[in-house]
Image 1 (cartoon, rainbow, N blue to C red):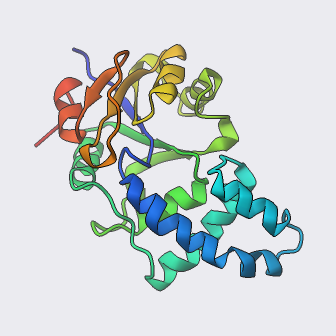
Image 2 (image 1 turned 90 degrees about the vertical axis):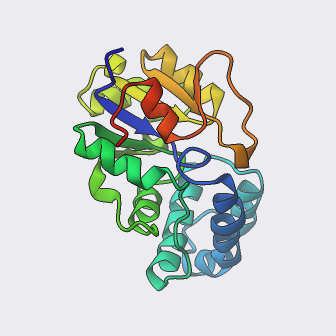
Length: 213
């Protein structure tokens, strides 16, 4: 198998436990949203934002607001990003081995940089050559992945997308990307029948001939 030249990774359920986002990041942002909204009257009504948070809507304005609130938490040390134990080592190994690394998440680019910049393993942001959010389009639409490949100046066939969500993988595959679903035991992810499946990044490396040691 010819290995991919680049990796595009999701965050929640792929590099970071769903519980970290659900039980740490979201409650932190929700508790501080009223004060933030009061200081920014130009934003949508507080009730609207709270309802969007309750529904976990992938609204770009909401995601940007959450990112700005989280920035304070990371800066003060109240928040430290939680990654699966296999992630930091293999991201560094893949980068050192010449793979180009990119992120695509529904969280804003600013929030992505904050998460990877404040991990127990240190600042991982220098490993990545690009960050993409909903500004390129929804994660369940093939056109979004085509735009990312174009923006990264890479053929879709050379780009491996990692996500825990089958519908996102379907969209990426429709755009010509190679795909692998992360089925993390702690997140009770249901394994896909349409895509390659891996329990962790070490298994991804084994399946796609990526650097491991």
